[in-house]
Length: 179
Image (cartoon, rainbow, N blue to C red; front, side):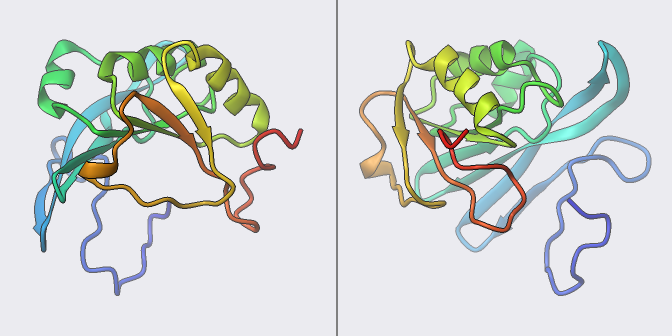
């Protein structure tokens, strides 16, 4: 996150509104469609900023990928309808700055995406809590590296959590299972 992105970046899509109203993105870049659905930011159960977060949806190569950002609350039926089917769901599993581990696990079960990618795990502890909570509903596949390749044809047959390892030097904790 930065408020001053590199000016060479051709498309900067902020998840919050700038000015009077929520962020609204619908952008086609080559064969990729990027759109957003806004959500609110809460702290201690109190609304801090309406429409202060965006769930970004990327549609490409027959896949629909959702990045929920810093999701602070459960989604309404209207949110779910606006988002639509997600083949890949990227969710924060810090368990404190965003939804609780139980809340984010419930969201993963609600979408039932083919692939769940946990993110924002700053230590193996929160990731392990998420995996323990979700493993009865999803297969878990721990990768050694920080990337993987997928296509519509290679999506797993049953919903799967894919755990990737952060690259060294990113400042995001130890590898899963190291602590």
